[in-house]
Length: 443
Image 1 (cartoon, rainbow, N blue to C red):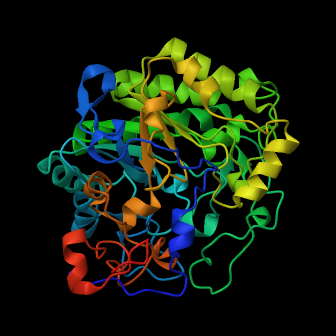
Image 2 (cartoon, rainbow, N blue to C red; image 1 turned 135 degrees about the vertical axis):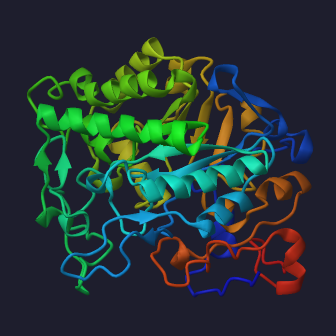
């Protein structure tokens, strides 16, 4: 296995050690094998016992292969599938009793927000994900499939379908879609391709697509469960966000009505595969994809109370209030202050869900994870960037070893050299031979 080539955008040791979620390291916290990180955790209502509490966060990597590789630009390929390389990537990050959450899997072509993302609606995709799951299970790990519907965070050039959302609300910013339309070299603005408002029948179709994907994931691929991506400004959060959802029917107009779509999706998923195998990810303080609605506590508070009342979910998964993909920590704090939420945290939602396993993601690293779980608000911590760059991160945390630096330029494909920045990050016992850079500047 070769060492990854480093681009100028590689994260610096200083950047990688910063608490990007605004949570500073605890003084005198227990570290290594005596930490609560390395104690068992039960999810799935007692059906799964994890051996440790660091979870691979869902990460879009755009490493799928095209279903129609020879398609012309006039009728481009619109779907991708996972192959053996994808299986290797997940297997590398598997530990006995550890939990991985997959990248977001589009339930249909219309749902897909990016090229290179393997869906779960074609037989070849399902066969590929079955191999991924088998590779994880062979190493004693568990894996949940995240179900992802981009909604208006897509463009019709890539999907070949009308863009859809809760309402026909265009982006309020000049944000560019990250990939030029097929056959072109220039990016386009999201707002120039506003979505169509989903009809009641359209809403039912989206829910049916979620159900079909969940059944395929659990019954055909063997995933241990499914996680609804309910955040980051994608379709579920487009219904939750008052600046996007301006409907006046049963799906909009009040916090309670804006929650209806998400609740109906979760009801349908539970009915399809069982509440032991259903989880949700939420970003109640997020701004991603122009989701800038108001009434945050009223909306997400009602949603969480209803979810708790209706279902005994496998786990719930939240993003830290101060962690943001598109804004610095300082900028995000200004947003929170402008909402009167200077001291926002996730304890409100933890209290609502009571004993439901509660995951936190966003900005966790080898400096600020220690002592957090002992405080009792969170049951597990999901790590993304440093987990993708450090396949053996669990062992390194336990042994106090430095982590690999990551290369931002290789986060998102598609690439022809797909393995670079994907499966060629080295385990610690391979480092000496390669001289691969570590987070602390070591070799």
